[in-house]
Amino acid sequence: MIRVLVVDDHDIFRRGLRAVLDREEGITVVGEAGDGLEGVQRSRALRPDVVLMDLAMPRMDGVAATRVIREELEGTKVIILSMHAEDAYVFDGIRNGAAGYVLKDDPPEAVVKAIAAAHRGEALLSPQVAAKVLQEFGHLSTGNAPGPAVVGLTPREREILDLLARGYRNREIAQMLSVSTSTIKAHLRHIYRKLHIRSRVEAALSAFVSTPSGDAPGRR
Image (cartoon, rainbow, N blue to C red):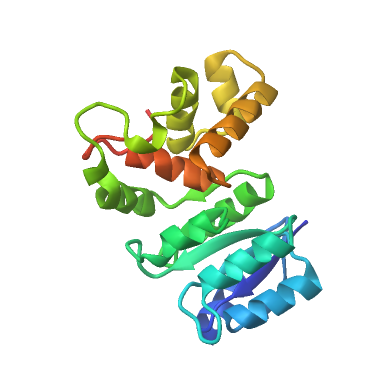
């Protein structure tokens, strides 16, 4: 059973989301919080597996709350919720350890998939967010040359990073490259270290940065 905490300052949205999640087999909402500070406090007390975190909230915003939770609670994953894909908070949230980003107008199943992915140690980025991220950072790439974020990676590491950005799981990447999942995990650790990042989502963003403008990654 995946234990979820919902943190959002809009009571109606929070209750509606809880009602949706309570109907899902394998997920239980263990609590709610109305702002980032309360979210941190309730996370410390409840130790949820996954926190669904709004961004713009009173007392403590979602970015600061995400940073505290990820620093203090190693086993708790945070998924960012936002009304706007272009919201600058998303980038700070990801840098501070968020395991995914879901738009509030995404279908309910997207939230459920994000929770399941985070619980598996994977990540889910809303397709709309991925497209907006590419548009935002596309100017950092020129032609087909690798962007500055991935220059230090080996060809195999770039290949894995590209597949990760396209949404493939470790197992799928391993099958495609005819290697073991432990090998993929080892490559990902090297990628994280070289790029000075902490999560699959940040790695995916690095891939988006290095993709020529207009060539948004997506499953083939």
